[in-house]
Amino acid sequence: MRNLKVFIAYNGADYHGFQRQDNALTVQEVVEKAIGKLLKAEPPVIYGCSRTDTGVHARRFCFNVHIDSAIPCDGFIKGMNTLLPDNIAVLSCEDVDNEFHARYCTKAKEYVYLINNKPTRDVFLQNLAYHYPYPLDIGKMNDAAALLVGEHDFAAFCRAEGKSRVKTTVRIIYSLDVSLSGGVCEIRIRGNGFLYNMVRIVAGTLIYASEGRLDLDDIRTALDTGNRAYAGKTLPPEGLYLSEVSYDEAQTDEDYREILIKNLPKLSVTASGKERIKRNMYLKTDLIVDWCRRKLNREETVVTKKGKNYYAVAAGCTITINANSYTIITAHPHR
Image (tube, rainbow, N blue to C red):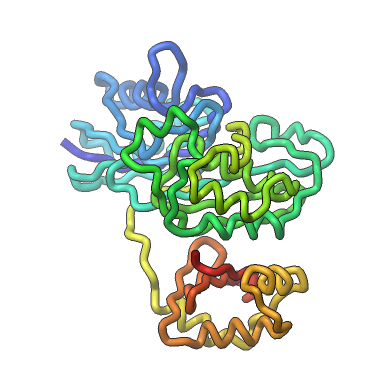
């Protein structure tokens, strides 16, 4: 008996989530039937890395399946992509140890929430992004996002009925970044796990921060008390994508610090970034780049890289730096 580790992508608009249901069409049901047809056998049970809700999409979703067949992985990929509908695609397939389980072996997940921030609806983003036609303050959103990075009790960012499903509401967020390009806002969040509706509530909270309906103290209160009233609304599912699933331990690479040290002369900061860091860190100096360089040069500074940014944990604060331009994005104190 072989154990296959398979990555798929799917547009979730036509499905009631991933997990099989008795009275609704799901991704799991469609994929299992296609495997059965490909192997000319009873549809096997596949084990997914996550549950996704109705209307939620996946760019890289992992499942494992035990099969009694000698079909090569290339043949499995080609055969499945012939049998599956156009809104599901198999991306990769490999043999793994029988102990591997797509859900229980997961070390980190990354989600992306897309917001169409154009003044009018974009018909080509229908069911693929949440339409929010009002101006977004990306600086305020990133300031709020910085408070959520780290290990916290996210009870305030969970749908009420979801709390009974888990032993603890404590989760670790490794990175959370907001960007805006071409009229599309992207919220990218990576962590060791997520609660029911957590990413959609985080996204709603960042919009409330942009609007001024929530300030940084409100978000701190949400984390401290678990009171749902201090977090934002739950945004609709169509903007949410499971972007990546990782099975390697999140780790610090000493090479990242070396790279950053070598490129200290390239460090820069925008005017808005300077004011953000001064405000967050209660600094009076305008020499923010010099301040960051001194922090980064400390021997105890630890640097990790998540997505497009470096995160430097240095003497009581975390500094976020773009890995391509070496622009200092923000800094925030540890609580």
